Length: 239
Image: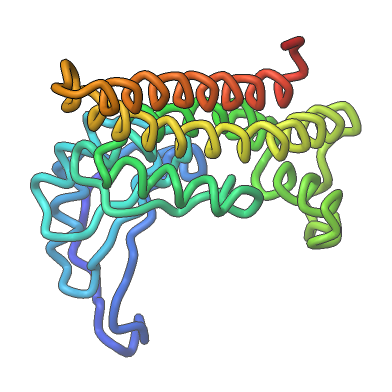
């Protein structure tokens, strides 16, 4: 194939700004990072949805272009942030928008452990949402949540009953697990900060301060234990 000059005048494309979609799974054509860089020289193209799933290609294309690169694959969104990604065009956010937002905020605030934990928790559903052609799997879940009708335009059809069952079971399980995960990670951060303050009071000069340090350490241990119990309970495990 070759990239030829196109007429991007207002008569052909009325939009002033464009987001280029690179989705090889839909088009059957994988562009190189050089191709993407060339296309991004067209003034109207200011953003790219890069959905090859190849973080190396994403990084090279982003480095060679002034356009804003966004992940078009939920599974590669978190790693794409580390190589210059500026956003995502997502499927799973139709179901878990707040969790995805908190994953982004955690990464940007430097809490990579929390971001990774949310990513790994969402990953089984992210994979299932592509068990059949999008948006059929997402609609199966959203219709179960009474947020839409499970209707698709021909030639697309709803997912099979077995896939629908797996999708709904996975999503409903995450509605219990994700709040607990976010709760635990939030308080884990607070605990780390408080433990740092306690460490600064090590070897205190007076007995009262020593007693405060011992008591504070004991309270922190109890809080951590409660947080772990919440996680285990939401995973259906015994505590």
